[in-house]
Image (cartoon, rainbow, N blue to C red; front, side):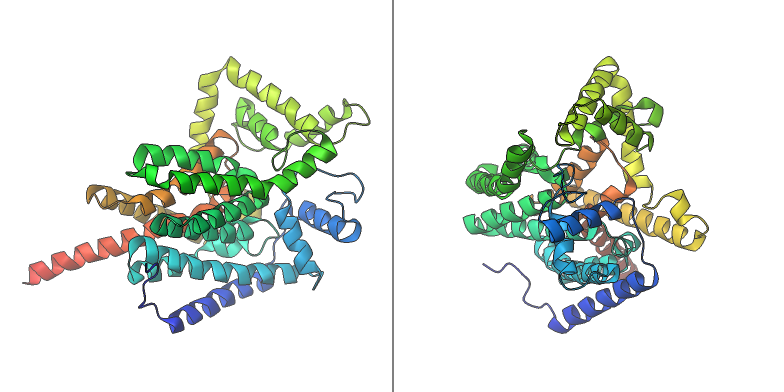
Length: 413
């Protein structure tokens, strides 16, 4: 079975990769940035390198972070300790992601034209380019998520258990990089049952994906249980995020006061209490009590977070202060992509040409949106899913162009 269009130009892919890498290389060399979590990732990586302990201090193990991105940093730091080396490695990885997106688009739309447009939109997307300049997990997550989706597409087309298993492995690695995807397998299964015809044919494959997914997480989960004597699949931050999400006084979004609250809870614990999960569990209890006391208020905050996720732009006011041209360009690019994506999705629905491959892409977008609306929804958190979003933006652009071209041709005739 042919998975990819055979008319793809190798020269175009080489030029695409080099151009993508060149743009990102300029960005990381000219505008290196430091995110609020960058120092924590570097601390963990340094501890693993020097002591072999996943810890901020080099002594006390931590359960508050997923392990894969710090381990990614360890691999780069074994060659060079420079922050520039990390950013260059991310630029290289992101350029590979651009090529993967090309193959994904070519496969699910059976069109090299849409593949060209998708990859070019990715090439210049300011949020994706900007994410390479930070020592944060977004770039690695984009790569892993695209690899996961490409394998899922191949699985749906070939029905091969090998492909399903590889999908589960990559989804597990994605979750070990960014735990937000922890609940995606059951979500995808339910969505498939509800909206995909002949979903029963994929039942065995999805089951195998889930088994491999669990097996991929198992070593880290077992480590957490042995060290902390608590079931922690990846990391212990869900309670804190839910606490923030339920806080009406903070409008359900991140507030620096959470740091003082965590510190206070931690100070009240026994001196021998090991692990962040004690604090996280307490925050979860408080959050659930708040939500139970006023459910409509919580759902109102969820609705607000939807707009925060999709209508804002990454980068705080302080970071973008004075950079009016860059800020306006990011807004313009994002909203144009949103408009074309909405048009593309509606065009697929009205033409009744939407298929299980399109639904698979939509499921990723929908899952990320819902999970962040339920928890914390900073605009930065949408970056890993932007490539999926660009697939529909590209389809919308090409469909609209073809529609106008047909009208012009018929009008001339």
